[in-house]
Length: 71
Image (cartoon, rainbow, N blue to C red; front, side, top):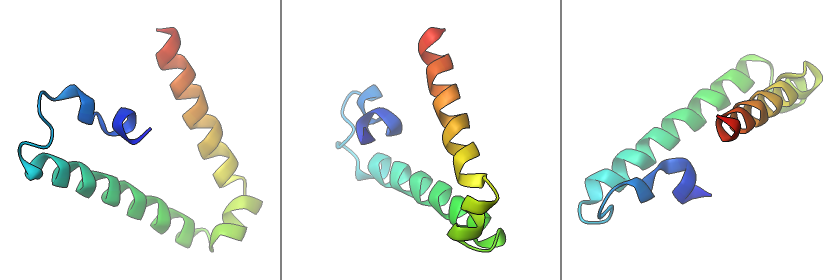
């Protein structure tokens, strides 16, 4: 999953320069922190679930993934 999601398999030799892996790691960390901040602003995980945020995010992600497969 990580190889697919990160795009690491799209480069000829991804480990030839650790800068590439480090860049991918930084991007993943940045996106994760954005989600954590969104959830914190909603009042935490319980509030995010009760407000339907988590469910909508999962639905949107599944929809976008399915759409990309069908195109």
